[in-house]
View 1: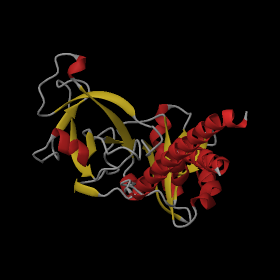
View 2: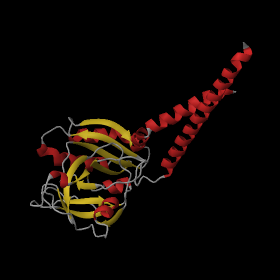
View 3: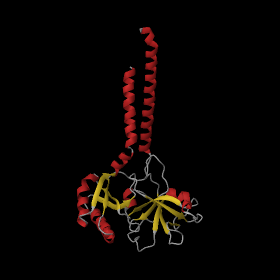
View 4: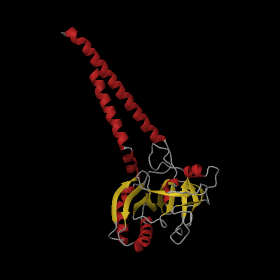
Length: 283
């Protein structure tokens, strides 16, 4: 009987060894991928940045005054370097899909002829706060509001795709047809992996938040030390402007970054654990 079982025992151990090796290889590849992700520049800073979702629930007539007062008070807090509102903080999935026509392309005959791109909206200090360098043109100003001509800032990927011969600054795009005033590109920023750290930068458009009002958006704060130390002060400053303001999802940008990679990190730990168990069983 023992000799009869021997071939099956040998086969079982061989399969066990092969499975363990496969798990080890898989874990190794995932670890290698995570190391590479950590080494690839994201295009923006993640350290010492606090984010929170802020919704001002009063009428739209008070929208501008709330946000301007809130930025002024938060930026004046001890330990705060910059403050900005943004619809489009990296790795949060915040943006809104839009279809538009871009200067130099044939006029769209039907909706499907238009270019689909995600839009984001930010206040003037956002790019400086995030460490996203301006490559050409100018940044947003406080005067880029609903009384000024519509403007936008694009990233290098947008400029390279739609204006490969250079000269994106001064060009226009239209979101409501070419019979309406177009939005002029006034600046170009460096690329950033804002949607997914594992993917190359894709074309991006940023609008001034003062022109593209967003009901719900993030307050982004860059601090001189641990950003969690200013949470209470920031919330107090916001509620001093509007006690009914909804403040949610208070996180550092490093936390958001880790959460965006959580599934890959979990898979890596799971494969490493299984391969360790398999290796013990084959001994």
